[in-house]
Amino acid sequence: MTEDQLISAQSAIFEPMWKRWLNTLGPLLALLLVYGVFAAIAPPSFTTSRNLETIARQTTIVGMAALGMTLVIISGGIDLSVGSIVALSTAVIATLLQRAGAGPVAAAAGGVAAGALCGLVSGALITSLRVVSFIVTLGMMLIVRGTAKAIGKEQKIDVDVERLKWLDELMASLPKERSWMLLPVGVWLLVIMAILVAVLLRYTRLGRHIFAIGSNEETARLCGVAVWRVKVIVFMLGGAFAGLAGLMQFSRLTVGDPTVAVGLELDVIAAVVIGGGSLSGGEGSILGTLVGALIMTVIASGCTQMEVPNYWQEIITGGIIIVAVALDRLRHRRSA
Image (cartoon, rainbow, N blue to C red; front, side, top):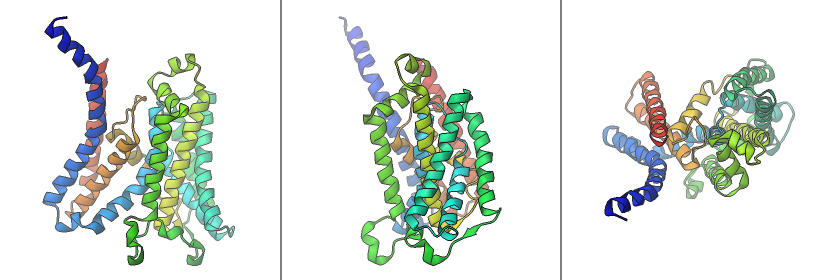
């Protein structure tokens, strides 16, 4: 073997691993770059521990829903009903607390179950009717939002303070006596859920099947994967995580609001895409998704600290999404 052939063989072995590391570390490096830029040009309050806690709390709602969206996108689908499910979850939790007299645990479980049910319906319709997920979840977005408004009779559902118990503390700033926790309970819940989903994707048969379906659905079917069952489970999990995001939203607002989270699904999808997830399916990671959510929150926080108009925040975020998708397409063309 000549020296040139040896170099070529070594490149063939190590290039995929190099690309893998770049896909994993790229979003993290982007986060550090964005934070460094704002740390240099924003007011000193941007780098305070209080603002870092605020960034973590603001990331939790999008991040929680993005965990489920990561599963959906890796499987080759998409879910546009996430924002509506969040609103429905807050309405269900408030209704169970205020009108049904349920305890906080039962109310929280009811909100998450409502989200999981919506995801189950979406998954069942997609697999049974063989309609693309974009169309089904677009319809579900309207159906779920309308259901949330019907529950609240197109008004917010107020909850008496004594019924909230610990639910209003999930997203609240930590008091001094609990400063040892470093971050609010809701943020730690996001971390725990992220670890569990990462383990599911990496070490379980379901995780391998999700990647297989997203990479090539027909090949996965020929290899014996129960595609319809996996898709239903994936969308149900996506709905459940949207329900958990609704629980975090309720903790933040302490009311059931059928009009909340309009457009949240765009932020959730953006978090997955910015974090390296491919809209073509078959690619994505939990770490990348959380980093993508953090990037958007850091940009929003930095712009707010610098008193940048809100429309510029939207323009910047939109530009980042376009660049992320363009880079993903470019990567796929080169590997083809």
